Image 1 (cartoon, helix red, strand yellow):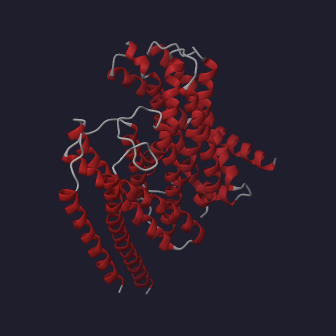
Image 2 (tube, rainbow over the protein chains, first blue to last red; image 1 turned 90 degrees about the vertical axis):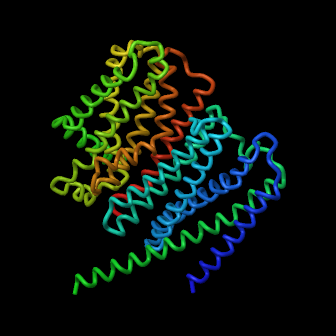
Image 3 (cartoon, rainbow over the protein chains, first blue to last red; image 1 turned 135 degrees about the vertical axis):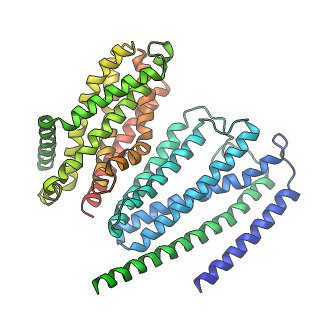
Length: 225
Length: 226
């Protein structure tokens, strides 16, 4: 039943995405200064939103695990972190492609780029830490701590690097960036299917974790026998 | 009051055992000197451009040397199950943590005090242009490094590849602290006073210290005991 829901959700997300891409390519006019490449923003920005939503969920999962000691929260935490990293990578890579066309360089040590990269490295550290711990409850406990610490560094990173000069376009959400309403609607309506895909990936990853736990339990039972 | 005494007892114990064996201190100090030497091959050490990156160089040296000290902090207690004994003792987790952080802090400051004049001589930098401000930056940033580093030293103590995991996890966490320290140290080594934007970095350093000290004190029982 649960898998059926996931298939359904996936189909809806795919349909929405196809519709959005069709509208992007045919309905929306080229941006005046940037031309066609400007359309990358409709994936670049929603990917960033999605990845930060995931990291916020990872923080909640970390706190909830430490409170409840329920391993389900741990599998939720690792799932959202992995998906968040994937969307973070999508954000970084799509930004690099855009920068190559518009700025002429793949990368610049600009605050928005640097802060996103630091954030990505912090959460990659979380996954490396997990692999080094064998025992499930110890792994869950220490990675919950790591998740909480990582999230508390993020505001510092964004806050501090803000004092550097930036050549990144101003943010459209909570920033001074100006955007035509048509574009803005498109941006948010593309966030919905990406968020749905993220939810599906998290759900699938959590099912894997659950099966892993079942296999481990069976193995332990077999050894005890 | 009792908490303070316990903290100081743990710190004194750590410092005493370190000063008697000098295992981490010697390794860390010679490592710092080797890095200082290696930097001189990376660029012309006497050029004016070196002054512009002096703060960054100095803090890289401190961060590398600090990792060696922090690695030993909890690993030292593994022999003869000393860590279990410490956890089982009536000393609460936060006092144990603060004591260890304090001992690491003193050792790190010691290394910094030795490295600073050496750096000044080798790289032709006048290190005592703004002694009070520089001391304040060193005190604040080293505390940030010690607190975060000690917490991760506790977190990684039972892991495989502990020596590898600690720097890998700690350096990204320390980026705000090291960044602020580098931004502040460079003008101070050039003899300029702190003003304007630089004071914002100072505030950030203080904020980092406060937030991570409190977070570490809240989380340390979870890390040590579970």
